[in-house]
Length: 191
Image 1 (cartoon, one colour):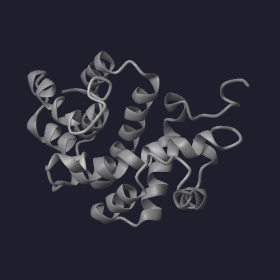
Image 2 (image 1 turned 45 degrees about the vertical axis):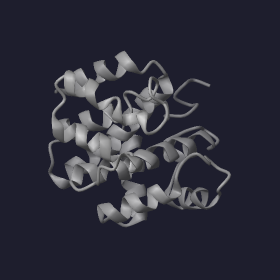
Image 3 (image 1 turned 60 degrees about the vertical axis):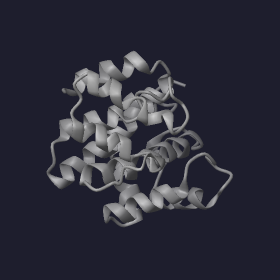
């Protein structure tokens, strides 16, 4: 499946702009790792774009992503991508074994957390976010309380990368696509 096909499939099932932007943010981070690891960037991008495609119709585990997987299979999404999507849900029973599976898990919660960090900056921009401020926010349990800090830490550890390096790589990846992610800030919006 090509990235454009994955985007169309995502948009068919996901109407919320914030969920679409989340998929794009995870894609930015996962694609950056694909380049770093010398992996197939298109394949990794497709995986990231589709990881939550069924969230609006199955917002609770264990339905998400298990009930979405047969939809992907029927649409011709290959088994490796479907397995990675299943593995990003800790309750799925699908162990994260491949580098793609570990990368998707490591980037999912962090991308959401970095978005939240951007929104509280004066200019509402990912350009204002740095590792030090993210680490401070990770300690604040009241901030973005729905984001699992344990998943962020476990994700970096299982991927075999230092947490600060992981945060920095994802910040940089999201900065490259800030406009598309709605994280370019108020100056870009003409405010």
